[in-house]
Image (cartoon, rainbow, N blue to C red; front, side, top):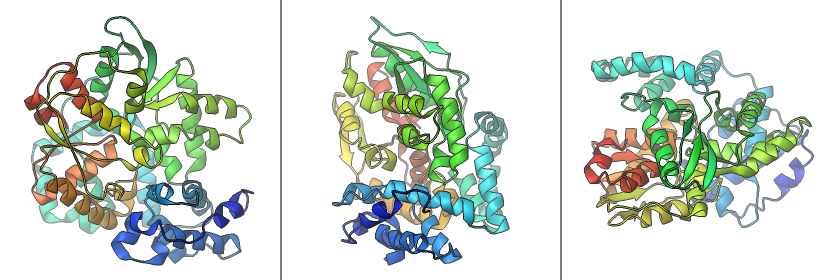
Length: 428
């Protein structure tokens, strides 16, 4: 890890005060020092001083969700986000993983960042769900015996309906106030197409011309947060080239927005791309962030719904966006927003974490589902597809019937006057 000259200073910033401990999901679960941020920083320092990346050391790094709650809590300004990403890249370069784990990881990263591959999976997966074969397979426990990761992948898949395709341009309603590019994402576009459709409508109703490039691909978030740096850089370059012609890029998935805002650091060593990457990172906005900056114009119709708002980690901790979604929801007449206990604790999704660490993820999902259930809300709102799948799965396990929607879908229902039933029934 010594290739980065900043590493010793980044490690020394940690004074081991312990403020991070109650916000770290894995420390909360197990109470193990090496599964806390300061414990992992201690292991990073050992490796920097020459200790090899042993299996147990790597396991502690793998158990980290990368949720960045510790970054929010740290009074010393420790850049744990940089430290864990650098460490994971080092692990990917140096540590030979067992064969079965390599197969699972390759399967994940050869599928999820590629929309066409996900799209090809939709038909068989939809048939699998509609015939009831999914329930039969779960009762047999076959996938669980084959691979806990495969079982988690199957269990997390949301119910699939039709997937309407968006046009390349959606015109502003009324006078045009802005022209924005819209990232449709990989999992979002194929598993939650309704979120993208609602995002485009809301932006248009607020006076934006929405450009939706058909050639766009993965932003690289999953690869970046898993230490697959070169893969992430390739995705980043393509995204930069795709969106260079628009003034603002609006993103409705927290993990994607967080990754795109990191492009400057990701491509800093590439002279041909560093300046272009920095420019795009500066023009990237989360949907809620952008709408608050733009200001409301379209009329909000009453929406008598009680909802619980979930803070996605890569929105609240990585991007510092907490007040904006709440402000947008508070402006909807008759809408009631209830807070979820322990909002700083991750739901267990964390990119590919719920596939690679399914047991820990399930424990965190259960904790989050209990807290959501306690709100008495009839709708859960989250701003990241991984969170939506993770919490919905945990709620189903509890037998709790709460619909899940995105902030964009709530705003869409209000702006179009669709009413409570349409949102609660079709939000997820």
